[in-house]
Image (cartoon, rainbow over all chains, first blue to last red; front, side):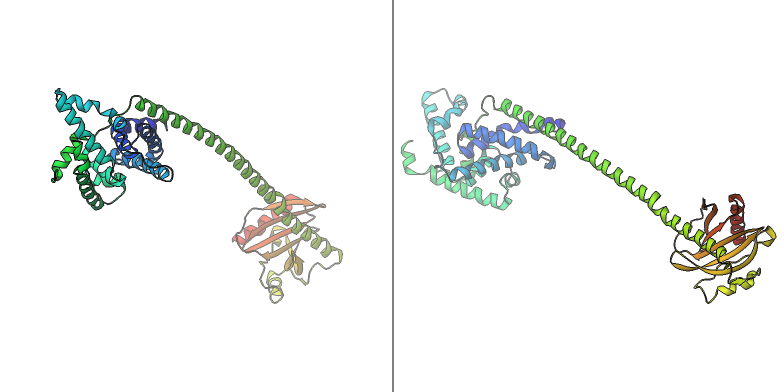
Length: 180
Length: 221
């Protein structure tokens, strides 16, 4: 029992970054994302006996994803979904600027571009947002994404295509272009 | 329209979209939470095991009680059937001497006694003369034991009369011999040749046992 818990920590905690990033993108709130990840890890420990080896990351992320969806569904019955908040949602992004030029103008441009992309992704419905995040940010294969989202690989491909189309439309939106 | 190519769009997302870093303390918080869940689970299992052991103890006690009551039934209730027959056999013996109705067919010839039973019973009891060993066959008669008509063979040893009641048994044949003394009579029973034998006499126990052993030995010849 204790040995199993130790084994779980050893294999699951290295994927905390991916788990948090997915949760953060799905629930769009730092504190709720932390709660989701913690809840998902506890659930994963309970289901760990049912895990049949192989790569733990898709299995773990599917639990994170389902935990977030449960919360999203509960919230939908309540208040409106959270909108993208520039200050809040860019707070954790400082490191990205550091890697950019030291040129203040370039930094500003880069920041604006980043905000635009984040806002565009964040405004997609969760089912399209998640395939994009898993594909582009986690670099997962279609099969792995299929495992996470609990859908066939074919559906992953069509959702990804749809997500890209929607993202393009968002990025090319004239109102946003003005801000550029 | 910009970012028409998937690769171009992918590069944009990869470079510009946030990859949210794990907030400070989350890793430790989760580690602690997992530890708490584990210890709660361990405690729960320990309690469950204790409860299970309690049930197991009760189950064992119950099973022991059952075994004990079955044993009592086997050792006290079932032998009462044997005692019941022993009592009837003694009654038959006493009655046969009381009313001078010892034998319906008085003969020391086993070839006279044995055929006499045919037509009167649905089986043919083994009849042997043991005169050479000191137990003379003097006849046979019908009697009634344990709810059925049975063959009674009468032997004499000096002045003692021996009644041997014989009827067929079905199923397992127990070869064990049982002897007991009741009301001053000695009773012994055995099984063989598919028959149940009950011998009763005022003969002493060792002579009666000797007689029954002769009967069994004859059966094997």
